[in-house]
Amino acid sequence: MKVLTAVLFAGCLGACAANPSRPATAPVAAQQQPATASNSAEDLCRVGQAYNARGESDKALGVLQASLAKDPNQAEAYHQMALAWLRKDDREQAIVSLQKALQLDASHREAALLLGMTLDLGKQVDMALAVYQAALVHHPNDPKLLHEMGNTLLMKGKIQPALAALTRANSLAGASADLLGDLGYAYLVSGDAKKALPLLRQARNLAPRRPDIVLNLGRASLAASDLAAAAEAFAQLTDLTPRDPQAWVLRSLSLLRIGQTEQARQAAQKAIDLDPSGARAHFMLGVALEALGKKSAARKAMKKTLALDPNFQSARQWLKNARRKK
Image (cartoon, rainbow, N blue to C red; front, top):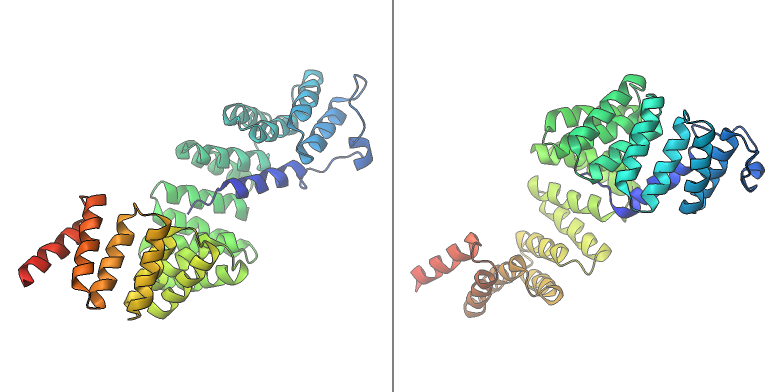
């Protein structure tokens, strides 16, 4: 579950712009002063960092370029340039800047994290994995690097190495909803729902309004045959994302599994109202209608399912069985 949504990535940009592990040596007030030709390269870099922290990317780029003209060997200046490029949605320029930062300082943790995450966003997972592995040579016990490497391994389908990296990260870090959620998801993908469940429950307790965590908690509950917990999780999911038709489909499924057929029908109908083109929603409606004894309406729903998705085999089999029963 590589959770690099736009919101999370923006949060990373803000944290990296502040860059607390590489503090400025001048007072903050000095960073607010206009850049002039008499400023040192380091001073200009700090001014660029201050512009980045305020989200003024164009000003940051101008000052950082001036800084690098004075001293081209500043890894942090290239890191700050990458942050500005990313805020301007130019990943290619950001990657070039981050690669230069790491050439100058292979131990630059923030540059490695940002480069790996940027490559992951562009689905360049092999390159991202190499970045994390190189960074861990310098920071072998860094939970964030291990966490991101674990997620990248999961994206590559390397489930056992991903579990090893995420488990180690979890042992080194404090309680983190992101990490517990990703470790739980990795166990779910591995087929071990029982190990996934306590991790996902902890993650939800820490971040009860994270839809991705609640979704995976519901999936793990279903896989572990904890049907009441699944229904509760998917009910919470529809509360968090009431406009998401797939959340209502999952709620319908979980309600059917605990025998609440009318509520399941209502949930499936809600999914259809939100997205009439969703074949799964029409299928769930058909299943619920059949359970309610409404055979004709169920048949109509199954035919609609196939009209929307001719490859929906479960609906095709349902109609075939219905014809046999006539």
